[in-house]
Structures are given as structure tokens and as C-alpha cells.
Amino acid sequence: MKKKFVYAGFVLWLFAVILDVINLTWFEATAGDTNLVNISVYPAAFLALLGLLLVFLGLKPLLRSP
Image 1 (cartoon, rainbow, N blue to C red):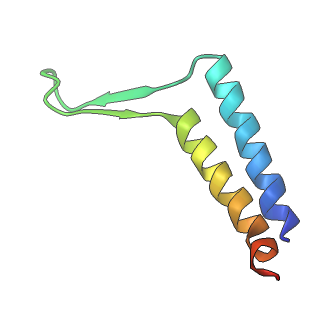
Image 2: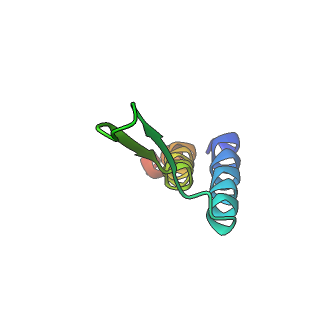
């Protein structure tokens, strides 16, 4: 088990919860004045998924052992 990955995953989940609680759920960027390009990035969801990936990578050696 890679404890650093598991701990980093939990920290990212904590950051995701904090971002969600203070309602920084999205940032929006537009190109020009006409809103032809509208890109939304959800940092709380991104951090939660990244945290899930890190926890999985940390626990992966335990899943392989018989």
C-alpha cells in the first residue's frame, strides 16, 4: 500500500468539499463578447476525481496480492 497516495487522495477530497461548501463550483471563460466559446471548469469535481484516482493507485498493491 502506498500511504502517500492514499493521504493525498483524502486531502484532495477535503479540498473538493471545501470548494463545494464555499460555492466555488465553476469558473467560466468566454472568448470575445458574443459568448461563442463557453468553457466551464468544475474544480471541486476535478479534485474529487483526482483524489479517487490517487486513493485507487495507493490501494492497488493490496488488490493484487492473493
